[in-house]
Length: 354
Image 1 (tube, rainbow, N blue to C red):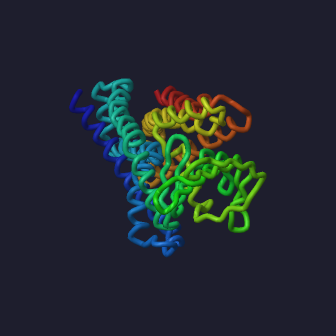
Image 2: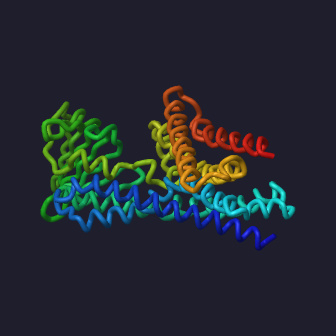
């Protein structure tokens, strides 16, 4: 039986990885073509655009794994069914449960691979990719931290604790140094909005640090010209999709401690945990489809049906998440529901094909 497990697992795993390679290559090419419009801004070159796409490969692989697993399992097992090998395996006394166990062993290996990519590779490579791209385009160095992000503008250092939207921030701190690297001015603005090429700061508290004393001043509003632009804020802001599950858990604790909105990050956190499980469910559903009418279909038909089901899962997942946000449902419930729904479909198909 170990030989059978390895043989079936090899078929599922190799087909899934091959489909993943094709999908990643296709989506990378599309994204590269779209990014060519940015080439030439600042020092952003074609070589850097290619490097940016390479660094994003782990994140893209993580996103496409359920779809690749779905199509790969259908193609791999469908090939065994079309050649008659699956029929021979069944008639030789191998039960449906034993066949499923062999496939699920391969699914477990794929799920561990998905988890490793999502937790170890994707967050680091995505962060490096975004930072290098933003530096090349804007010429500014930015550092993202758990409590916001830092940007250098000449002799000034800017700390943005909260990004409200692309052109609006809150809790903005500006630290200005003189040529001897001594801190001279500290400015705190509760709110800032970018309009007409400059920032409008509101509710300002400014401290001027002299050699002998510190003078404070409150200002209702003031215009501020800076190399810091909204595009850079969007790039270096904490994006939930680019964090690992552990990173999201820590960031959620920070948001809760500061009474900030956590909904978007809770959805991303549970999505990270559910995604490996969704990959396994997609493989299970592929087995159920192959054991049914799809086993006798052509290769093209199997790929088409597998792709449509995978796209259907992605659409159902996004719809469920958005409905959860709109209606205030539990993030855990809204992210897990599509996976459970497709698992139920797979179980129903297996019962129907017995």
